[in-house]
Image 1 (spheres, rainbow, N blue to C red):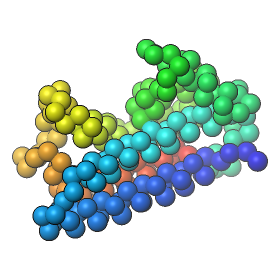
Image 2 (cartoon, rainbow, N blue to C red):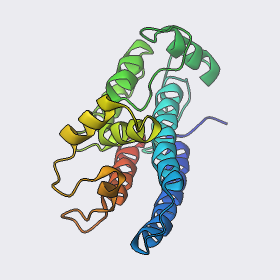
Image 3 (cartoon, helix red, strand yellow):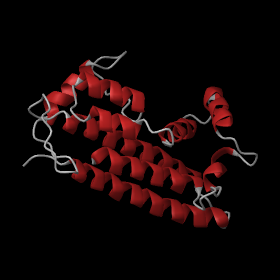
Image 4 (tube, helix red, strand yellow):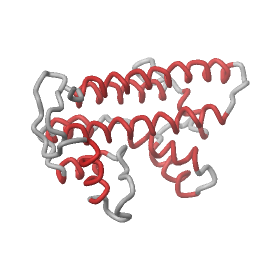
Length: 199
């Protein structure tokens, strides 16, 4: 049975909702001054990992013959299966050939989609490359969590977060103009992009 992009989208939506639930529990702990920074960091890091996996699967399966888009269109990709497409994607990686590309990076994912001649690369590009995508903010925040002592990550965060109340990880608990917490708005943004990209 052919893979469907709807299935990939549903899997990301399921995982991202689990991150939203975890965040709500963390937020309650934060409001009671009992925040576990390690759980918070894990939530941030794993959301970016899940986003990268979604982007990878979106590009790889879009390049496989017979994959079905959310709108019902059957894609005529050039690869017979996902394994062959993934191997070619690793060969096209800039730098360390043979390693997985940085799938969460829209430019990298789109570059590989073009190399793999993905039939729906225009639609994928429009979705992943959206100006309001929170993926880059999430990546910088993730890197800060993983390498907290890095001066470079701290500088990037200060330049990225235009907020007078920014203090380390507390920024994700700030309320946006739309009424969501920053982290929840990032989750919703990625969910919207996955819906658009899978259609």
